[in-house]
Length: 116
Image (cartoon, rainbow, N blue to C red; front, side):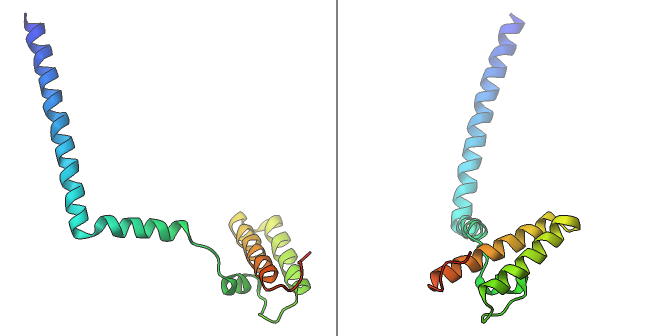
């Protein structure tokens, strides 16, 4: 008899608790939409996801100017990539590689021939 009462209390209590959690979640969503927190969070997430290296940033990483020939860019890339492969950091090596890819796309987009 006591076990049946205890089981009923547990089932009823968990049902009440589940409804309270759902109601609190709905209220939190309503409060967030009123204050603009939800939109700001979505915008920040979109900004982080779409962060692409600019051509200017790529040129700064490789240390080249806008007038630099593709051969000079590749020489700088090779030096920096190999230097970081031997005793540098993987992070810097990946930044150098991304910079080369960015400038390669820019050169192809400008119709300056296919970089090789």
